[in-house]
Length: 219
Image 1 (cartoon, rainbow, N blue to C red):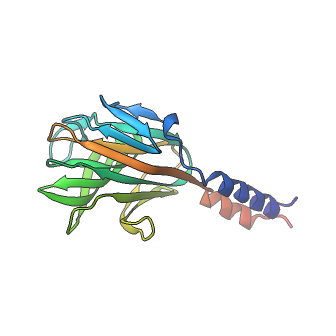
Image 2 (image 1 turned 45 degrees about the vertical axis):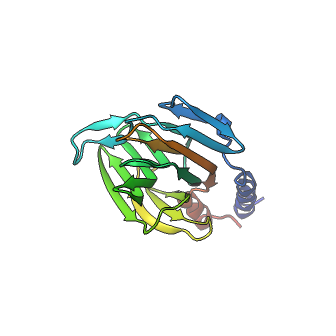
Image 3 (image 1 turned 45 degrees about the horizontal axis):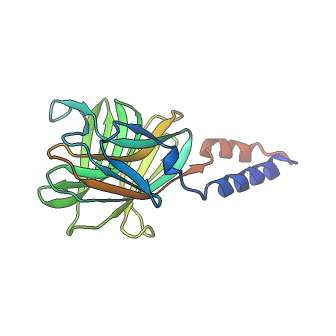
């Protein structure tokens, strides 16, 4: 069997393995909340009061204590999740987080600020930054999708899991395993209920390796 045929077989196997979502029961907690449950493919949690992820910039403090339910993956991938929450007070938030360690992570989802729903992304590499897209109305849920290719992670949002819009392109070190999962935070309040469903992570074959195989294919 030549390299082209081997590559085609490998891609077929990857596609077959990629249709299943990550099993929620097999994941791990970082900062486990006091109350949570998994039922019918959904994770619900009572978000820990006065918890968040942020490092240094603008506010002058560092916190790393909000609930995060994750699995660890290497290589390139596409991850997505459906997010909803009973947001109550300023900075209540829920979404996806991709994390190497306490100094390197991306969190993206809905954040409730000044009575409005915002699509929010925080990118942290030693210090945090924050970007928002204000929504003109409340939403019952949002889909967040992240695609990792080489040293970049693209973050998308959708209201229907069909049409996705890019909300951020951020750097993250290539060839480092990352923790991917669902996070929620309540920096300014006494907690709220957040729910996540349809969480999945699909492996993407390494683009650089595939290019090399194509350029060096044996007849």
